[in-house]
Length: 515
Image 1 (cartoon, rainbow, N blue to C red):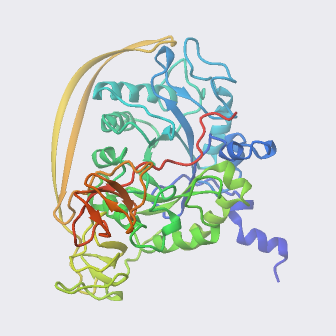
Image 2: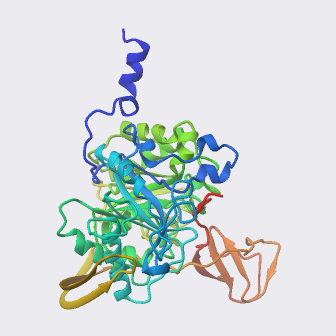
């Protein structure tokens, strides 16, 4: 019989026995991403200083966490031509030395801590933006120049103003929650041009909110190649609190985007979740519940990559929430995907009126009717059906075909860049090959762009609305076409215009500095 201590070691090898540090594998289904840098727990529990955020290596002592995005580089263009980084109680421009003429803190003391995490097979990336970030590019050229600067300051380039000293981060994460995504494709593509000749693997990820398409990241996600997308399933109507509501939970359309719309069909989609009830304004579920949801999604959609948590400080205080989720992911299996059979649901039949909750198979997916539906299931965020699983066999037609057109253009340019507060000026001539890709899918009509729902009241059957009145209903913003009373938005009367998913919710309780 195994002793109690032996049983603990056997059941929790990731917690107590670090073993050999395997390299990060983005193709797996059991990766755990945990943001670090904002001391979210300290921001919501200011008197509990003992549990404030620790240095990054503190969270790398076992095998629970695979990816640590460092949050945030919150200002793109600061004094002296340098960006700004704010890591709350660990490193910031108010409490730590800054590089001359700038507001960029010198966090070089973190180099060994970052490298310790990397030595254990984890990747450490730099997250740009955050809830308070509102950084925009004025042109593609500015975006490309900024990508060059990020490469030199944080990744494989060189500069005299590297905030993390000798540490070389493993990639960039975009958490853009304001200002739109103009020229961000140029930024990502320029980073990719640096990555292509590098001696190590680099990654690019993004953290959109769950309403599809994301208001700020949707355009760049469709135009540039990402390795992973950490969808924020919280602080929104489509959050984990509504997992069992097909009219709200929408992982399926993100899976469809990943495999048929994204420039990288191998991109991995993660369930983003709060690591405790105080980590976000809504969407928190206990570890057992999230673990069960993750297992179901892992066995339902091949794009699933794992779980993302906000953030490390909250997870550790909440009974090692991160370790519990990692255990569930590991138990569900890290490799291999078996397509469920389409025969588990009857094939959709044209001309049939389906009641809400009905399940059918159609074009390689199993669908659930959100309401009464007679139209064909389609990958439409405002449609009557929701994708609840992929499937194969059973006489189901294949997924909608996509037509792809690619054009390649080669440009040669000479660029002279001067970085303020550094000791070097560089001039270089580069030959850049740009490939543009457009994908058209006939069964996915263009959805409404989305609207600002802040301060807009929910629709009520007891209110008489005049033309132009705005309401929220089922997570969308609606505008009355004319006078309307008791006619539900989206109903047969046609009184309302669907302005798209609400887009105002932000990642909860993110603070650029701990006061």
